[in-house]
Image 1 (cartoon, rainbow, N blue to C red):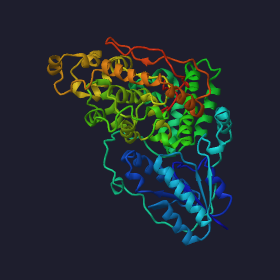
Image 2 (cartoon, rainbow, N blue to C red):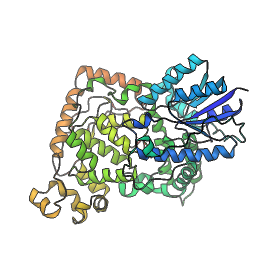
Image 3 (spheres, helix red, strand yellow):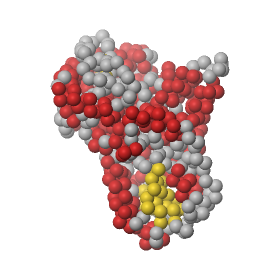
Image 4 (cartoon, rainbow, N blue to C red):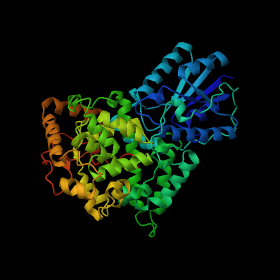
Length: 524
């Protein structure tokens, strides 16, 4: 019988895994993971990501071993690995999920496709998420198609597998063997499917009850959010499994008078699962948006390279804005932070510091254990105001700090230079005189920019561009290709108000596809 090579990428599970399920019915299975050293030298990857992925691979190996088909691990270039299979076994069929990754994985998959055509190897790819490729994509029907896909019965894990002869004896390399330096991660989540199921269960039955109320503040979000974003990014859970588990839980609490708050929280969570694929679909349909704005009229708006001193201060959590710095330092230690803080960090980098989202985005990508290119890069553009169709949103670090950390404890924990500043006054440090700052927190830097002045200048530049006829026409094209089909009333720029003067609320002059609040997407 023909050998079935199942190539596991970011789909590290045996449950609801269409390529494995179908391959198992066709012949002996060779489950394969390829560790690609070239990938791990890219500027958007990090040791913390490899740590989680390696743990998930080890968990997958246990699950496959129980089923009689040991996972085989190769280290090197995928095409070379597949050629070794061809020489060793002759004809085989290759199976995998479709992957919407970064530009490198896109180019790699194109090389694999070319090799398969040249070698007469059939490569069968299956959908991993609700993301349609090429002629299969119909934006007007996208939402309905997504819901139908998510309601299909998850595929069971195969029982006994007919295994193939051992072909590769590779071991999973340590991070330093891949050239990955320690990156300051102090509070990692446990990887693997068993840990992911435990997170899902605890969220749906305990932690998620106050999800809608507590997901915005970094003080409460660590517990109240599902914490499943990395499990979906590496495929230890399928999105369909999570969607259906949330629906079952919603049905169970619908008429339960003791389940106060659950219905609203579960509905909110379900909407974010939908937006997860909506964003990935954008990158799959237009891979160039990893590095270029959706609306090309915005190219060159922010100079590249950006100010290296400002970028370094922002990345280190040394901007002189306590809530921004606390959020960045928390992210460095945890590899995760809630969505509002991600949006604030990006807003500060791209509005206040006028840094290009491509450069700020690379730093954040390395920090995020749950880095999902299809979500990350469209979100970076959206928060920077370069999609042409989304509401411009500027976050005030002082206002956000007072609202999301009213006691100031989050800031004092993560910015110990400010430990002696009591209560909410810690958020007002950027407004202090130089003498006050030197007297009370001499080790903390002065504000790197004046927020009100910087925000006004940034919005003025963006709004001037948006008023141009060519930018308006391009916004229509972006909306037609990538926008949500929900009808929305155009909105004005959203500028956080605080006691210092902020940028003016001028009339909104392009359409909005409903994503501007930033609360519809990862992390959940």
